[in-house]
Amino acid sequence: MQRRDFARAATALATITCWPALRAAPAASSPAGTAPSQPFDYAWLKGVARARAAAPYKAPPAELPKAVESLDWDQYQAIRFRDDHALWADDAQSNFHLKFFHLGLFFKSAVQLHEVVNGQARELAYDPALFDYGKSGLRGGSLPKDLGFAGFRVNFHTDWRGDVAAFLGASYFRAVGGERQYGLSARGLAINTGLGRPEEFPMFTDFWFERPAPGHDVLTVYALLDSPSVSGAYRFDIRPGNTLVMDVDAALYPRRAVERLGLAPLTSMFQYGENDRRRANDWRPEVHDSDGLAIWSGQGEWLWRPLTNPEQLRFSAYTDENPRGFGLLQRDRNFDHYQDDGVFYDRRPSLWVTPKAGWGRGQVQLVEIPTDDETNDNIVAFWNPAQPLVPGEERLFSYQLHWGAQLPVAPRMAQVVATRTGMGGVVGQKRKYYSTRFVVDFAGGDFELLASQAELEPVITASRGIVEITSARPLASIRGWRASFDLRPTDDLVDPVELRLFLRYKGRAMSETWSYQWTPPAAAQRSF
Image 1 (cartoon, rainbow, N blue to C red):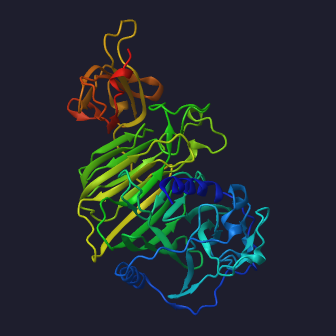
Image 2: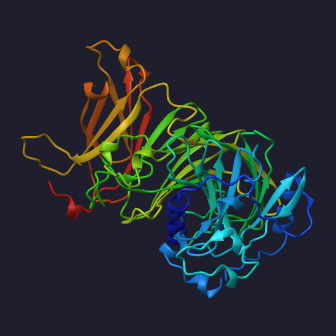
């Protein structure tokens, strides 16, 4: 599969996993296998991953029966897992139910699923009787008994009708907070993303579900990852809530050197917004799952990088040491700014990554890919360690993922709440040259403490060009401040220009740092 196929598959997950589910019957049976159980723990799983990495890579089979292979979108969505067969549906004291996805559409490789009870793992066997095939055109009795599953979704006892998390396709997974709305995705690992050639998509090939103790609110899932370059063992502790939290432990075992490794990769969609109207050919004012990349550096600086939909692939890197966190956020949660009453972009969760231990030196990297379709995820952010993976070694990483509108940390100073761009110059005066206006709104922090006559200084830097017509002034409508400036190119280059801006008062930073990458138009297109 190419990136676009995976992007569509990840977007499909948002629709597929939102099926309403009837309350499970308490006397339900769960899927079970006939294979004998075997001892299981995380140390054993690491050993399996290490052994796989020492052997040549074998791609998982991706051949499906013709009837399954030919399913279209509507037919695949017609397949429903029977709620009364959900794993643990027969346990009245369990706070979790698991339901499984059928193979088909974008999902052609089966994953092996297992339940772990008291340190013993047993396979969960595929059975066509677990599914209601509805109007899909499939007949369960004609399907192979060993067809397998594509992935799984998680239901929590607070509402059996909706998912709280789902793992489906390659190493993609999603979760929701209190807004109960799927949006961006996470992945187990990214390899060679944004290098101008097909990237490598590692896959979760096997999952193990640890049966929760009665009334326990944390679900533990283990996963085995594999790809031509890396094998890995993962543990996820999933804690549903208004902000859903996942504790992730990963052990990586490289088969070969990786040019660009992406840890804790986040994948989202940005088609257009107030700062980038290039593909705004729709009636809705904005269309995006996330509107910016936030970084809390190891030195304590907060940066905000608004997302764009570039004309060509765009790459940005923020060098750091032991970052405190980063994430793709949907800060703008005003319905009026989207007007979408179907998929509700204003409710899409943000996703924040908190490293648990020092990750050393490296970069938070951002890849922005052109798209003209909101079903294509085109934004990827991840941590790229400076120390490359060495074949034969073990590398351990631990971090938390926070899904929801309310994140565990936020800048104490003012945050960027809007970025806008347009034609530069002075209204009413004839323009003598091309320039672009940048307008950045800040709110929050300690603005309320400032005297009415206070003067804030916009501190602006640009890697090229002349910065002019700068200003910073109060903006009562947001109880904040608006900074603006023009950038005038001094050459005909179309290479990206790096911009930075923050507000300062008497030598003290009052805001986070706005960071932006702007690509000047070709000289022939610089009309004024």
